Length: 341
Image (cartoon, rainbow, N blue to C red; front, side, top):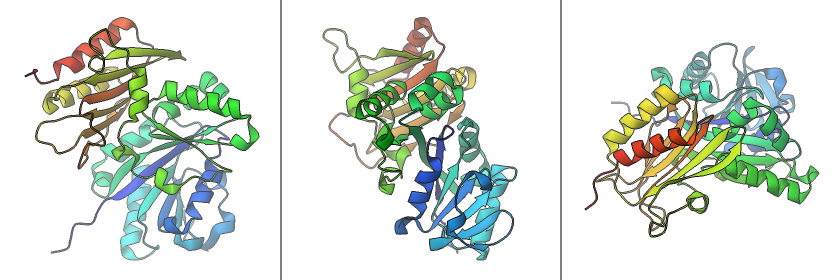
């Protein structure tokens, strides 16, 4: 009997036009520890990899210096990844341990995430490792205000990489980092140094715990209910509302899964992002849940809690909703919790 092959992690690299995805990607695949990486891009001409080429397999697949594989999406992402996986097994391309999928600068990453998590052929061989969104320190703030695509890329992020900080004043970079935290407090942030960032910071983002200091900073509690109640934080940004939730109770998993499924099904266009850490009965660690618009990722169970706080925590990001809608979301989350006592 052949052993079951571990699924290959896929990192989605997104960011607006000119954000520096090419610089970051080149810096990453030049690292020796990332030599066994496959890169999938939308257009070959959109990324400067020519200096790394050593062998061209055909019109869509190349072998890069260090052993990386680069291919272009000529049509369907499912076809591209399954074909690349077949070539890997057949020995037609070097073996790879991970995949980076770079989206175009004007792409909403939602459909890519839906494909990676919703197609049975891909799910059997690949697993989503997280979304890294690149933001330009010099122009990112304006792009977030003026372009819906930049905002969609921001709310989908599990991790931000702020680039070109050497070209921006420190206070401008700091303001952008604060702006990103207001839009998507469930994501972590790194400021790259000339496009360079530690690869370990970019891997396994979906399994990372919620950044507790941000979530707690968003929670406003009534007197006597500190650390227990869930309340909305309302940094309004292009119609975006962020809700932080914290409850010292156990979550009924089946009820929560059904509630989130209905929320994404009927209000996915409004619910831009959900990231939650849940206390579920009989699980040794928290259950990590992610959703982007209409897509709910497969949940991840951690082996242990990252800190002493074992409450259910969540950050949800909505667009174009009112206070009444947010109260309904709050009530729905509450209804999924197990009774006290």
